[in-house]
Length: 399
Image (cartoon, rainbow, N blue to C red; front, side):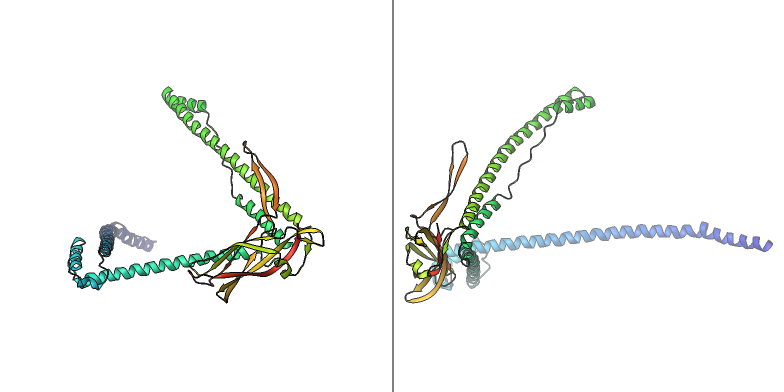
């Protein structure tokens, strides 16, 4: 037991030494180190921020100077061009030599020699020419893309035969009409606030003056809400009318497609049917890409019948063969509208009260139908060509 107390006393003294005498020293050293590190870290961080800001400011100044220099070069080039200083022949003219020096002084390029000034003009001219060529190429590529889209649109029904062609075309028109109003949405109306309740709340909190202010503000907000709701109702009514009328038109085309499905078809020789067609008002246009656009109007014999007595029209497509003199350079397919050689339209009338009356699809066999076709990139812009029409995929259908 005596040894135990002696050991404890010795250990306790050692513990006391570390806790009381040594640990404060280490703690103080740790705190001082932390504070010193924080100070130096803050200073270093501050210097870093200043350095970054200086770099950004320097870059900004350099960018601004570069923009100013570019603008001075642009203005100098425009001025030289205005006075006909566009190449090295200007050095042979005393007048242009003096003019060049004056312009160089105006635009702060007087430290450059005449050769250096002309070199700058030539480089700017080359840059302008290259940019113009790039813009022209972009315009041509865009034009080609549009012409390819037109070609796809004009020939998308060329592979269809018989009743399938007009049925598909009429249903596509109906679908297009319905899609055109598919995204129309109703504008939501807003609910007005109760001014008396809001004023009562304000009165309970602050008294009479806040209550009067609250009532006035609520009335102003309600007035704005009423104006919004009136406008929303008018727009919603107009939107509903447009959507309803568009769907009514679509139904007429769908109805016509259903009627076509019951029509008789006669598969006669295309050459025989082609002889019954008359072409007029034909135009040939060549685009800057070399694509040749053909447009013509077609009529057919109004007394044409199938099965000896059934009134009919001619449908399908014809070929437009394009010639450069005697040489054929290309051809395109020209597809008839939904009812072939019979001109058709949707008859409708709007009355003074805004009501729209739709009477259905009407037909006029006396009026010519318009055919269009495009032969992609087969010619040269500015060149003149001729066209000859030939039978394509033709058939006859009951009116």
